[in-house]
Amino acid sequence: MAHLQQHHGRAAAAQPKRARQLAVAPRAALAFNPASLFKGLTNSKPAPKDAAFTKQVIADEAKYVLQTYGRAPVVISHGKGAKMWDVEGKEYIDMAAGIAVNALGHTDSQWYAALVEQADKLAHTSNLYHTQPQVELAKRLVENSFADKAFFCNTGTEANEGAIKFARKWARVQAGIDPYDGDAVAPYELVSFTSCFHGRTMGALALTYKEQYKTPFYPMMPGHQLAEYNNLESAAAVIKKGKTAAVFVEPVQGEGGVTPSTQAFLKGLRQLCDEAGALLVFDEVQCGLGRTGKLWGHQLFGVEPDMMTLAKPLAGGLPIGSVLLKQHVADVMKPGDHGSTFAGNPLVCHVACTVFDIINSPSFLASVEAKGERLRAGLRRTMAGNPHVQEVRGVGLLVGVQLDMMAGPVVDTARDMGVMAITAGKGDVIRLVPPLVLTDAEIDKACEVLGAALNKVAPK
Ligand SMILES: Cc1ncc(COP(=O)(O)O)c(C=O)c1O
Image (cartoon, rainbow, N blue to C red; front, side):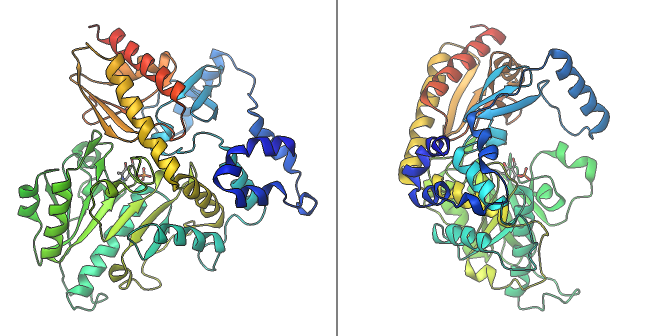
């Protein structure tokens, strides 16, 4: 128990009720021995394997797993906070966080406690029945946003898929037709922007910018219009009354190159949508939930959407997605219109409530902003004088280094030197989306390594 309390020190400060509940849980009533489960929190390190083991896992992956990913040649074994270790025992600072997912880092004690607590009761029932954790998560999301209702799904692309369907049905109802009349036609076009990324399933893929993600799977879903990001004139040319159902935009583009919208652009889109009778949808799968230092990315701009899609960090590493909707959109959806077997199950929702409560505190959000500033300042310092750096940009802990060359070799070298990063844009941006809980010392070390890696690959 002493061990448990020690690991719940931060929990007690941020969330006394939840932590206390767990600390005094009547252990005798539990069917398992929680002490053995909490062993994971002692940071137990698996015994390091040799290079032959790494080689074998990579060879087996090639043999048995469908080859849709270009993976780095490392096999990750475990993590703690913003650190990860590979199976050979090499330590990394994780500046990728599973592509902006592990907001609380790896094996956070409160995350782990919530997972165990709920796993001991109920993991899944489908949406045939009511479960309390789903309602609790919806309440948190609705009461802390512009929205009136939450829909749950399992990934970011699914959240956008849901938003596409809600927008299409909303437009049919708005047009005054019977939405179930297959012959009736209503505005159905969806607008998205250059460099956007909305996902890999057929609806979200149609909205996504990069042609190489789409062409092998042609034909795409019809009714998509593309406009130039941060260019209102270009948007105005395609957002049309009687044609457009919805406009999808990331308030801060992530995969596209870590590019914030301008306030004028988002405000202008809001106005164009209102004039055209179209919905404005913010994709905050990457920039939402504290990553920018605000709970929602759009709070940086003072513009509210009709719908917002979320996923990545919501359950701190368990799969979940959500669409938040204003009531006027929610009103058109009826039982049977959309759904998912796994969505919003009690296990993932209970964990997500814990993640949400930790992120949604003024001091936590302020720390993200401060860490982001430290990271950008550190990168500017350690990369100073390297002529290949064009810009260090971003908001909060969504940070990009724009190079005039491909970033892949720098990312590979940094990994060899113990820092995990990813790329973005045309492959010419180093993208850093670390756990929101990384320490100042980890930020400083990551900046030193990234600067040294850049100078090694592309000497000054
Ligand atoms: C803005 C944005 N939308 C949607 C997605 C798709 O999310 P997922 O990979 O969970 O389907 C991503 C993933 O990177 C994203 O960054």
